[in-house]
Image 1 (spheres, one colour):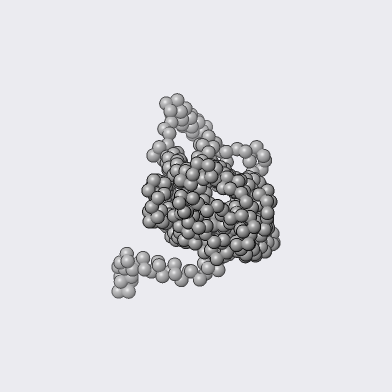
Image 2 (image 1 turned 90 degrees about the vertical axis):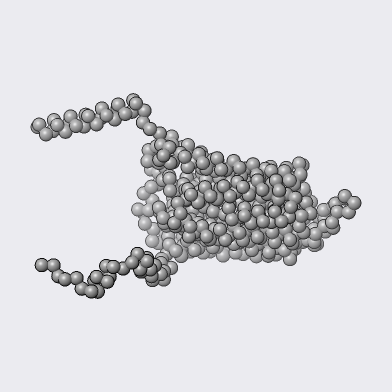
Length: 490
């Protein structure tokens, strides 16, 4: 005979859904101290700090571009070649790092340490060089650091969290916009004075090389940023030592066993080689258009505002910082959103926002300070999660390895290379506003690219088997039954 239900049991069984949700929330809060000590959380926090330091040396070039240009005595088309050398280094680093880490993932932390060493050397020497070639070489070293950090950091994050890497991936990238927001404010006191305003339709000539070296003190923020890179180099060298001491060989079971297996696209999508190859091509275009759009705006944004007399140097850097604080805010919001909202829905909303903001900035913001400033902030909110969202999307729909992430970064490096040179050329020989139209066109191209990506992986649009395939399947099915009948008879 069943025991009578006690009043306490009856009361516990009648708990409302709200009570159960509150109890679940309390349990999650109680687990936070233990989770904070989880080595994966500590390593992810280190990666976020790495992205913060990386943004310092990558983003310092934009606010100081006018002074760098004047100290060497070149124009915008010539200084754009320096930006190209940086993105060429980024390209070579992503290819080299992607291939190396696909075979030897246990050295990912060592690659990160090497990346920050190269970035520190390139950044420290940048403001002291007196030739365009020397500046290009140093920025090329920084580009290697940038590319290797992206390649190795993404691999580390994916290995740490596996299928649950979406929110940690956003957390890792959340450090980047904080550094990009801080660095323009740091360099403002070290910039050369503004040129006098135009009088009778004539603009004052740029500073001579001697005047630029005397009035500009940008070498000090560059030195400070390089010190941060060397500190990160030491941190990841320590992590590499820990990794070698306690390395688990089972973590490398997905490494290709031969070069032919390495080249096979079928390993990224359970044998569906053609579909995987098509998706990899789309991911390449996705990141190419994204970097074409973002580099065109962020690298030349301050120069546009100053050269068109929309803002002074100091005010232009404040506007530049508001872009990055908007960018940073959305990166942090996206960490929580990524844990609850499907990645394809997040990307659809974000890319649509980028599409609208690009058009408004190019058409109406080009001559209106208020519109330019307002939609610069909206653009920052929209574009912030798109880069980490793409890698989370790849991790969701593909059996992502370091090669998949490397293809994403190669697309980004190609877009950055083309954008940096072409925007500089347009800025110098066509006019500053042409930069905004180029930026708008690349932003508009990103939306249909992502739409095709999502349609390709959607079950609603999956290709139905042909009549011939249906007949073959039915034949195999019937043969299976016949073999089963024969076994029963025997």
